Image 1 (cartoon, rainbow, N blue to C red):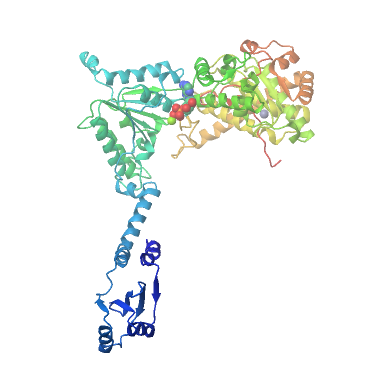
Image 2 (cartoon, rainbow, N blue to C red):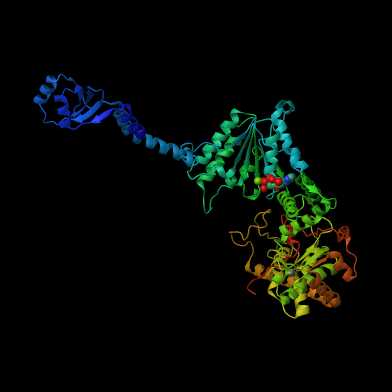
Length: 629
Ligand code: ADP
Ligand code: MG
Ligand code: ZN
């Protein structure tokens, strides 16, 4: 505006313009050339000359009565003006007055916008952050959730309840208040909730547990209140709280080391909203967690989450169904058998399988194809379990020899142990953390293990180290991981499974999450005496030593087969299970027979017993690099 005024104002005066000094002006007046003069307060004067041109000049303040008399004498038309009322200067002065306010207002606007609603966040701190799906729903449906028919049925029923409450009311049934989905990570809990949101014909509020938690005490409770007020207004409605363990953790009793006021208030509010003095009618709370053991007991009692749906890791047929869902829209080669893929992925969660299908597709693209082959799946699976494959040339020749001896040891002990899981593949190609791997496939999907099976598992784990001692005469750092796992299993056998006659049938579980594979040592002291600990240590050492002894005997008894397998491994780097059995002159047992060498997918063992969530990788025997060596 300033620039426009500056340029525009002078241009309003006509082109024929003269600037005169005082003497010239006086001369013009005397000569009678001046027709009009307009005198401003500060002495500026403008006017018209008799030749039609305009002029401007400045009249000194000292010019007094004489000057006026002279003008009058020359018959000049005189006008006088009062100071500074031009339109331009008026606008300018307004602008200058307003500018601080304008600048502050602009900054305010910018801040509240750019800081992601920081300002608004502080002002609206007690507002719930739930995302509401009402008319616009996610496109996920129950068809996208493969398997878990039982869980789906149960959740569907709750949705039905909301839709046709009268039917249930007729039978005198009260609507369930809440459904808690419990399961290891990646098994599709959030997916299931999304399917509910997609299919339920009622408003769906989705919120994560952690979004209740704020810096200020009381905010979480206010948010819970707000969420339920909002939901009540639109009842019947479903409220989904993902990762509810963020707020639902056990409230601290006496003797707790740390109390968390904010979380406890939030939980209390949630408890009373769900089943308090004023129970919320027509609202079902759906929640998901993978740590049910930390939840407050009050949250789990009937009237709150009266239904608990466990969503375990998928079994064989469910894995197949999940793979099918994720292979929709991908072109599979005729050689891809999803049954084989499903069989080779025990312990995989739904998320792992989704990842597997995606990695396989990426492998195909990398090879310049758009049709997925069986080997794409095999490669993807190995990559997920073991990590990226490296060429064998990263190993020194003598290291390669040691790895071959080690892996062949695992494989042969497995072959000659009657109840061990069949060997599916032996490789000395380093991948990820492992320098080599022996993969075992359980013939059937096991849910529990006999004692004989555990002893054989121990000897197979120690087969690598025993082999090194038998053939090379010394151990190596490559067995560190085997030993740790064997010790862990042996400790469990003694402490938890009651398999040691000296300790007897007592169980001291190490505690921790069922799903996350043990939570480490408990904070409290051990529940048994020092002497018991010493006895446990002795027994563990005995079990592991005996296992090593058995492995050594097996390998010594079949030393010729052993040497041939090592040579074969060094030559080919990867040897199929069937070849190992052929070399040993044995028929591949039960389930192994269904896996032909052509099946590019080689199958891994299952997690350790007593650990349902054990990763698939723990069944195979990747030998970690211990780099210090
Ligand atoms: P969480 O149980 O940890 O909440 P999610 O529901 O987020 O797991 O699942 C992660 C991903 O795994 C999903 O997006 C989906 O792609 C895949 N997935 C898991 N379970 C299934 C299933 N039963 N059917 C199809 N896909 C599944
Ligand atoms: Mg989730
Ligand atoms: Zn090993």
